[in-house]
Amino acid sequence: MSSKIDVSLSGSVAILRLNDPASMNALSVEMVEAMRAAVAEAARSARVLVLAGSARAFSSGANLTGGMVGEQAGSERDAGAILESHINPLMVALRDLNIPWIAAVRGAAAGVGCSLALAADLIVAGESAYFLQAFRRIGLVPDGGSTYLLVKAVGRVRAMEMMLLGEKIPADKALAWGLINRVVRDDMVEDTALALARDMAEGPTVALGLIRKSAWLATSADFETSLQAERNMQAEAGRTADFKEGVAAFRDKRPARFTGT
Image (cartoon, rainbow, N blue to C red; front, side):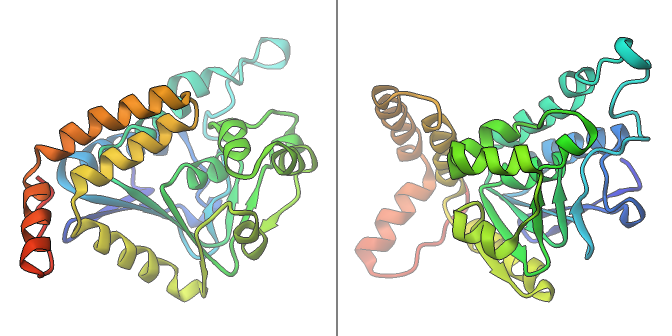
């Protein structure tokens, strides 16, 4: 595990923290590899994941001195190789998580750091947070799924504005656009994210995992495919102990005690 990634467990909530404040949590190869391992472990040991950064930055993007843009110079450089080997597998792992996850964003969420934040199921941002597609500043194209995530979240026109102009989108504007879920005081970001995570962790997390899976499917599937997926997932959810408990609690007029099974 990288020393620049901290992982802890608070009850049933896994907290994965990017911890390289000197670089504003710029992602190195080592950090991405550690994140993939931590995400896999969270899927086994936790019921919800929270991904957080530090006070000044969620993540400033790829560490350009950390092996993230290829080693060859000039026309021989393949800046896409690291996407294939590291970034894309991490993004797919986050998409395919069997548990819900939340991004807790303070300060900069730039470049692939912006991609990471926008891939979350819920995004809690501090008043200092901003979202930046910085790729044009170094002559590269958005990556980490940014083009897909932005167009799906805010539409082609606003996505184009972010990517072509490379302007900071402050938290209040991101909320108005529907890019994020909450804006709170900076000192309340992680408490808010943890409160949401604990609420979900006490819920029927098998069903919540299936909900997030069906939502991702719906971003690219046709209506009939979504209907069939819902039918299949409903059958799976209906076999869980949580469904039985939910029905029993409804009949007994009491709060349900879900176990995530």
